[in-house]
Amino acid sequence: MKRYAITLCAAACAAVGAMAQDGMPFIHDPSTIAECDGKYYTFGTGGGGLISEDGWTWHSGAERPGRGAAPDVLKIGDRYLVAYSATGGGLGGGHKGQVLTMWNSTLDPSSPEFSFSAPIVVAESLDDEDCDAIDAGLLLDPTTGRLWCSYGTYFGFIRLVELDPATGERMPGNEAINIAIDCEATDLVYRDGWYYLLGTHGTCCDGANSTYNIVVGRSRHVTGPYLDNMGRDMLLGGGKMVKSAEERRFGAGHFGRTVVDDGVEKMSFHFEADLDRGGYSVLAIRPLLWQDGWPVGGDLLEDGLYRIESARRGYALELAVDFQRMEMPRRRFWEIDTAAIVPLPDQTLADVAGAWAEGAIPARLGDYMARPHQRWRIEAVPDAGGFLGGQYCKIVIDGTGRALAATDRKEVEVVPAFDGSDSQLWRIEQAVDGTYRIIPKSDESLVLISAGDSTPSLGAWDAWSDNCKWRLRGI
Image (cartoon, rainbow, N blue to C red; front, side):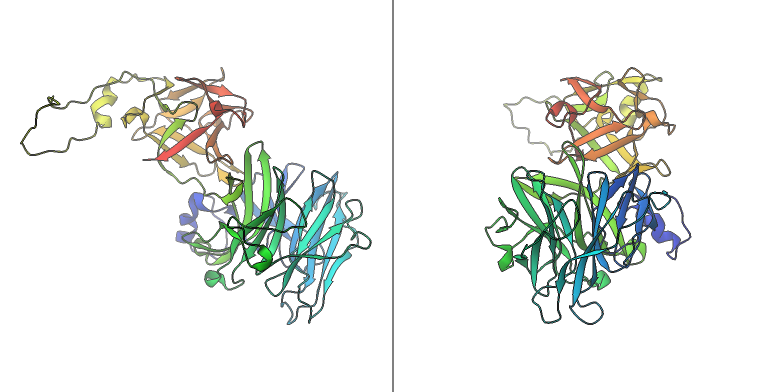
């Protein structure tokens, strides 16, 4: 991991590893991540925001006027619509607030085209109103082309208004609709005939003591009713858990969804306190999974020892070497041996490695037998860069330097030693069904595939084919 001149101790920085975004990802209430001209942007409370060139290392520099709170950003056509709040939510001592929208043709502040339009008020609240005009979330309905904005806090109702996708203004005569209570920082998602309302439940703005967590309900209609998995209406406090605290990160809130590819999605949010980052509020990106029609927040892949199993048939990725039998006493199945039972040892690397060829060895798929040639250590590689929500990794046979590598022939082999080249670096990304796709950095148009039951190779990603999917089982 790179070192930065920030006010955190070196030990804490070193502990971050693959468990957090790299760089200086400090932000509160991040907007949905937007991509513009090859860079990623997110905006937060207080004005400004973060930029990343690869989706892994983040730094300050994104700009938006208006300051205020809890923005969201959405690309419509060739322009970007930003919604944000002026006060509200108890900020400044009251609940009087406004939701405003503005446009820009680019999010890059260095571009000569960078210029935000004058903000337009699309929703308001008064101090004695049962809704706060704060925490806007935007949805452009892919089925109708209509634009919607949800807003509100735990102080009262979550409300929904319709906006004009051409101007960003509120549609004439549109009345706000109450769709939820007991949450805030809402966002709307459409998927497979369902509208999902994701909100942040719990206590805010108390660092490591914040109980923020992300919940969801769904409806066949954008205007609701939004019910959770038990049929509870979010207008009555319902909500199914999507993402809560992790072991050293607390206060998960402000959901945003990014579709990376067919079958691969990410969720962005903040942790109100990351203990490894000195308790600062930080940007977090995790896999977004879908199980039985419900969104589920995934976890980052951790360094460790894994069995890599093809979803095609269930065979394990292995070094293509001769199978070496384990020595053990022969027993007659039908006779009872009264001698004491002595556990047998595992086959070890020292037992078999001497018979392996010294040069590059092909990879293959075979029955998993917990043997050394099937035990893969996956580790993030410092300074190798990253992608949206992850770092590039090496995949090596445990206890050796033998590394999985992509070849120029669009095949894979295991080379004698890891050297950090792009052909030996892998982007391991979780798909929405919980399986993984494994992509060589040297050619990210390809993924590791099972070309046959026993033949690993490289080919195009197909979200609907088990040939492209892998299960990583910790050992």
